Image (cartoon, rainbow, N blue to C red; front, side, top):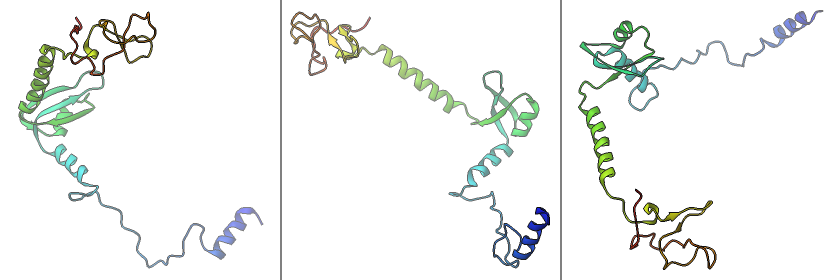
Length: 175
C-alpha cells in the first residue's frame, strides 16, 4: 500500500483531517459587515466613502514627483472626477471650502514668530553671551567675578548663580 493510499484510508476511517466535531446543521459564522455606527470599527471607513462620493470645491492633489497642489473646482467635483482630470495624481484629499481656517492658522503662526523675534531675551544664564560650556558641563560664567571659581583657584570661569542669572547686573544678550 502506498503512502497516499494509506492516508486516504485513515481519513475515511477517522473523518476528514482538519474538521472539528461540529455537526453539519450548524450555520457558518457570518462575515463581519463594514458598515457601522458611531463607536464601531466601520465608522471611519463610512466617512471616507462619503468624502469620496460628495463633491467638494477645493481638493489637495498629490503627485509622486512634486509638492501637493491645492486645486479649486466649480462646480464642485467628486474624488473620482478629480482623479479623472489628474490621471498622474496618486491621491486627492478634500479640503474645507472656505480658506479662512487655513489662512488664519498660517497667519497666527507667522505673527507669533514675529512677536517672539522682536521680544528681547529675558536675562538668564542661558541667554547670556558670558555662558561657556566646556566639555559636557551645564555651563560656567565668564563675566562675573563675584561667583565662586568653577574648578581651581586660578580657573577663569565661575559657577553659575543659584537664580540662573535672573538678577545678573553683567548680563549681555547674544548678538
